[in-house]
Image 1 (cartoon, rainbow, N blue to C red):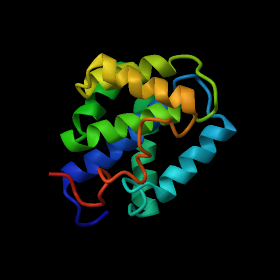
Image 2 (cartoon, helix red, strand yellow):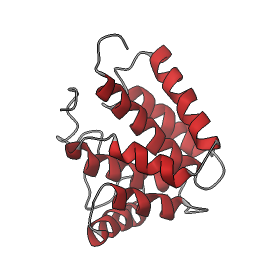
Image 3 (cartoon, helix red, strand yellow):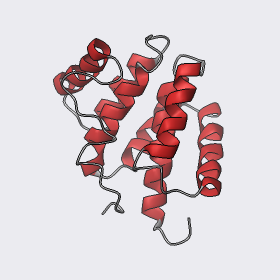
Image 4 (cartoon, rainbow, N blue to C red):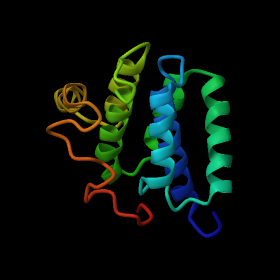
Length: 158
């Protein structure tokens, strides 16, 4: 990723870390989660323009961070690397990913709740978003699709 600022790289890596934290919260990476991950990697505005070599390098760092130390500290650090205007859309995405395999297991709800708090989203709003994803599956009835939301514009964060 020659050219983007260190802040933008940190933002993209934070997005990878947050997504992987949700996926791995139940201790497994299901076929449905793998399919969702590949779709995200190749189609989501946050990731799709990242060259594969740079993406894989960030993914390796994230995987290393997830296997060492306290996941809560990592999640809080990654949340801090996300610019304010992207926090709600990324929270919506994380909520959607938590139900990608149609099951809530392990620490998935806890990861989503901690992420909402780290982003400064009021508990009631975070719960509404998360419950809409549970009620409506991958595309909840009240929350917009983050991949098509106007809040995901492919420009570097401020």
